[in-house]
Structures are given as C-alpha cells and as structure tokens.
Length: 303
Ligand code: GRG
Image (cartoon, rainbow, N blue to C red):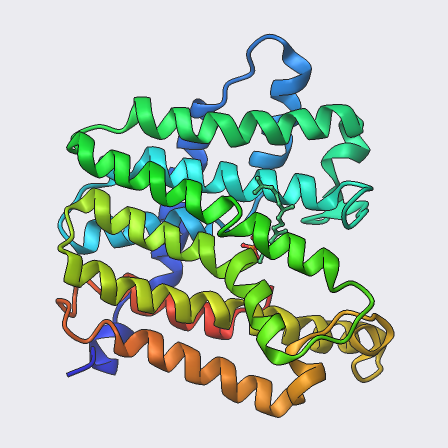
C-alpha cells in the first residue's frame, strides 16, 4: 500500500528540510573555500552560497539514506549537484542568454563580477563538481562512484541541461506545442532532479529495481516542479500587479497555463505528484517519509 497519510503527516518535513539544507550549506562552504585567485572564488561563492532552496542536494541525501546509505556517502555528490545547478543559473543569466539582472533577489553574478568572471565561475563550478565527487566521496565502491559521475555528465550535457537550453533558445519567440515544452522541461529541469535522486540511491547501494522506481518518482516531480514554476509565474505576477496572468500573457514564452489554462495545469501538476508518490509504495514507510514530503513540498511550493 502507498505510505499512509498518518505516517507521513507525523513527519516534520519543514524541520527536516531546514536541517538538511543547513548541512549542505556547511559542506558547500568548506568545499569551495576562498582561495587564490580570490576574485574567481568570491564569484563562485557568491552564487553558490546565495540561498537557493537546495532541493537537488536534499533529494540526493534523502535517496541515499532511503536505501541504507549514510549522509557522508552522498554529501560530495549533493554539493556537486548544487555546483552544477548554480553554474547553469550563472550562465543562464548572462547577457548572451536570458540577460537577467536579478537572481534569488540579488544582482546576478555578471552584474557583480563582470561577464568574463561569471563565465569563468560557471566553468570552474562545472569542472570542480566532477573533481569533488571523484576525490571526496567516502565509503562507496569505485564502480558506484563511476556510475554517479557518468549520470551527472549525462544530466548536464547534450542529453540533459544543455539540450534543454538549446531547444529553449531555438523556441524563443515561437509558440511551441506541448511535446516541445515537455522536452525543454524534461531536459532543463527534470534531468538534474532525476540525477539527484538516482545518484543518491546509487551511492547508498540501491538495487536496479529500486533505482528504476526512484527514477520514475524523480521524473514526475521534475516535470511537476516546472509545471508549478509556470503556474507561479502567472499567479505571483498577477497578485503582484493585481492583473490576471499579466506576465504570462505579456511574454512570448510558452508555458503550461498558456497551453492548457491554469485549472488544467494545476490538475496536471497534482497528477504528476500523485504518480511520483505512488512509485514509493514498496519502500519502508518511515524511511520514505522525506521523499514523500519532498514530492508534496514541490507540489505545494510557493517560491
Ligand atoms: C549545464 C554545461 C551547462 C551549461 C548551462 C544555461 C544552461 C546550460 C542551462 C539552463 C538551465 C536552467 C536555467 C534551468 C532552469 C532550472 C530551474 C528550474 C531553476 C530554478 O531552480 P530552483 O527553484 O532554484 O531550485 P533555487 O534558486 O531555489 O536554487
């Protein structure tokens, strides 16, 4: 049976998230110290420690612990995921890409450090992520660490984030259909969330069968994450401006609410969350509580 509501309701998800995110914060801080040359490390740390939600690292740690691994086994990979996510945001914000001035309520990396340093900070985070997994992972057999490195490479390269970004750039100014929209989101967003869960499980010693269930779980939450992002774009902007769908209608970006309407988009998101949680049915109900909580958190997130 699926994890019962009573068991998951007693789990303090907010507290769990806060604690795990704090552990990740400390680990990131020491993984990328302020070394020489200082400018580049300042630039890397500025974005890395800028207060993201840490969803990817927490998913990685939770998946590792779910299958019997320890936090220590997964922490370097959890940090690497946040480095990869951060570098993708730095590069996404560049004038040649989205040209954004603000990220997480603060000036973007290139606004603070210049475009040259922002490109290099992204490059440095991208390469260091792999080095860190390879050299800092403790207590995991080498073949599993290799699988993790392969999975991370796939998730950010031309079968993952980069592919999503390319198709996104090529779709600019066009109305795309649902298939293309899904392709973009599966690659830009779901791929790294999937890698987070699959890598965490791999490091914790999961069986192939467990990994496949967790892969389906993470694909569903990955897509839900993006559908909700699109919904928030509409609802938060309209709250802010006191108008309906102001930003969504004004921009030429294709979104779920634009293609399906707000109501149907909410239904799609809820269905994806339900499907994700259903994949967790065969796991120990106490141990699986964090992943159930993360799915509901993504489903009900407001930022
Ligand atoms: C990866 C090699 C490489 C190059 C970069 C620019 C690019 C290629 C890809 C863009 C990827 C991108 C911007 C995806 C959007 C991902 C997304 C959903 C971001 C928001 O994630 P949250 O909500 O953000 O987890 P916080 O701020 O909480 O971390």
